[in-house]
Structure formats: C-alpha cells, structure tokens
Figure 1 (cartoon, rainbow, N blue to C red):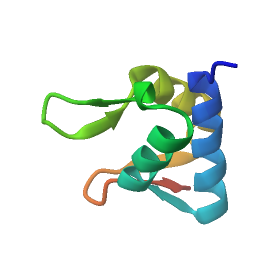
Figure 2 (figure 1 turned 60 degrees about the vertical axis):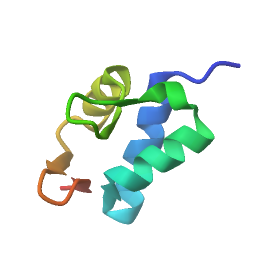
Figure 3 (figure 1 turned 90 degrees about the vertical axis):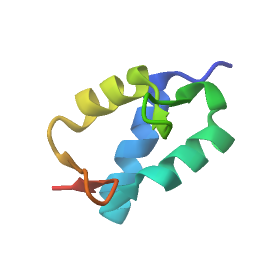
Length: 78
C-alpha cells in the first residue's frame, strides 16, 4: 500500500504535539527510512528538505498550532 503525504504529515503533527518540537534533520531521517526517500529532496541551497506535498499537508493539518523556528531548524507546538 502506498503511503501518502497526508500520512507523513500526520506523523509530523503527532511527533510535534507529543515531543513539543520536531527537528528537521530528525524528521527527514525518520521519513526517509520509514516512509520513503521520495518524500525528501535536496533544495536549491543543497540541503535536504521535505517534499512540497508533505509540507502542504502538514500546514493544513496543524492549522497554525505549529511554528517553524528558522534559526534552530525545527517545528514547535505553540
């Protein structure tokens, strides 16, 4: 059965809610190994990043309850 961006985003929301924060590098490593490498890509800066579909589903799911901390490269439950 194929995993959807929605399922990846649900995992991200649950992790952020449970732990308080979700570090980008940890999320990318987990998503690659548990959901598949096709949800991760290398962005224009040469850094690993999540697919646009996952980010879009994640934003819709958390509905503003999660904030991105640019300097620390993590998401935090607000």
